Image 1 (cartoon, helix red, strand yellow):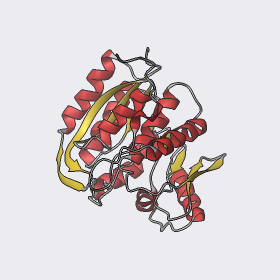
Image 2: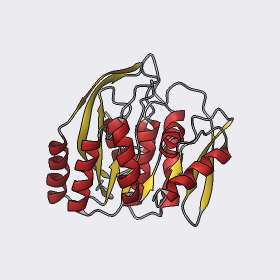
Image 3: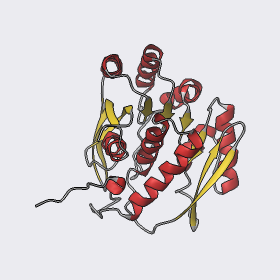
Image 4: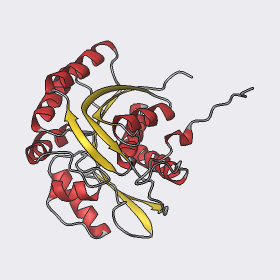
Length: 270
């Protein structure tokens, strides 16, 4: 099976394999594309929380991105954890050099267990410079609250925050609604001309570690293959819902989802 497209992932590593660059690689591969990586940080974590975070030198992040793209040019880029302003500056410089148009930004700020993964200077730079460079930004509700300085309690609040992100320069916004305790999960897609609310059944489970990373990587994969942004969001949400539903029940805390949900091996093992 030949990969459908090539994707560069710029994100942090998760030693437990449920989120971060490990979840990104699994998602891209399961959906039939080729994943390349630039690691921004190494975390020691498991399903119960984050023990430590070690940042990669910003110069090395720049080297990873530019040297990889010089040889294999990506069709799209997914950006995840960028923990300092120096790292964001390095990524912005690399984007100027490689000139890839399809960029999906998942503004990772807090781990599932509550550990902060970004500093305040980095948040300001992300708001003022990086959001404008992205084709799509995919914050969850706590991230959207930080970026827009608004409190989100209802679906209407999500729409208001998404519009504020468009005012900040975002071309397309997908706010993930999993943090609201409703019977259905409402994910809201907005740009200057369109609004779409995706309603999904909520699955009662603690195993949702890495859903945000997985969704943004799934959407990136569909966009990289030429599908429209809104349709890519719809397909990505479906993939994540199936992955949550079929989770492997690993770990003692917030366990991982099943990234292999769409991968079928038509072989007979003897």
